[in-house]
Amino acid sequence: MTDKLVESLREQGYTEYARFSFSELAVPLQQGLRSGNIYATTFFIFILLGFGGIGAFIAHFLLTDRLTGGQIAGWMLAGIPATLLLVPLHELIHGWMFRWYGAKDVRYGVIWKKLMFYAVAHAFAVNYRQFRYIALAPFLVISLLLIAAFLMVSAPWKALLLGVLVFHALCCAGDFGLCAYFYRFRGRQPLSFDDADQDMTYFYARPGLEPENP
Image (tube, rainbow, N blue to C red):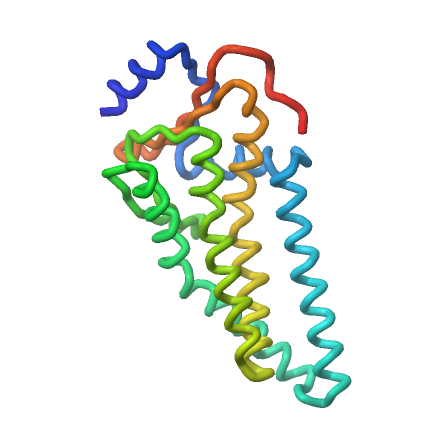
């Protein structure tokens, strides 16, 4: 099936500019996060805001004697295993977004050596605009749900949810990184698709200039 897709893309004037196995996707996401463009900057701003929120939360509840330092640390650290419980929802949101754009063959998997979970749409090309919505939807949806819950629960649960919010944001580094990588080629109408049978991700674009600066 991917052969037909590749042939169709070539007929439209597209050429391959990169390919990575699923286990190698850390390479483009790291390149993206180092690029300093809008996606990389936004990610680091969110992380800084998250840690700033943790600092403000700790100061507030210590000063008001509502929680001890040990209680705050314990509840926040519990956010790590709690974040793992959100992985299925995170990947399902990716999958739902693929289906929203018309993908029929959506698959889920994990690379245990790297503790990397993924959702891919086999032989389904997405453009830059679609890619960014598919990639960032879990971050937006889950963050909003956690913030809403944070406003309605008591102090210990607030500590837990704040920990989950920050840890989940850190886990979204790959989503932001791939958007940042894709963004560099935005002037060449880039496309991406996955070959789930071969565990490969391909990036195509129309011939043009070298990757753009942020």
